[in-house]
Length: 129
Image (cartoon, rainbow, N blue to C red; front, top):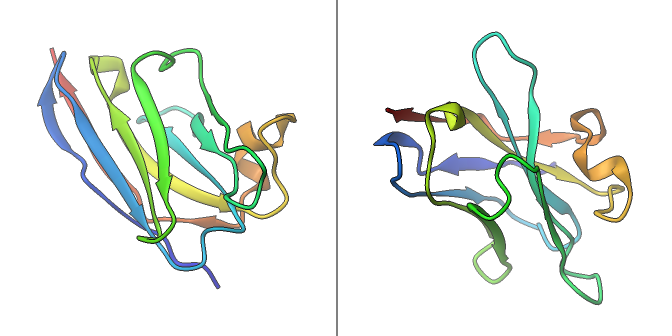
């Protein structure tokens, strides 16, 4: 059983930065991803980081955050990060990290929340204008 714990959310102004963290054990064999859900909207894909056992670690992003957000993983610390820069009010949402054993960044599976078995409890990010 994988347990994921997010931290780092908060209230910031437009243009500010935040770094979210997701801590867990045994992450190296899982593709890790970040999703977000705004009030009244469906959960949407933000970023995914391929598993550490892959020859090359790839990170993919939603178009809405590309160039502003950066995902990374620190395997010795069993932690995944989402660095969020140039935040906008439309980035306001609850952010979740998730783990998937069978997903890959080269297919569409990494962007599909239904493919993930493990989820954190979420951390609120609020961006004021």
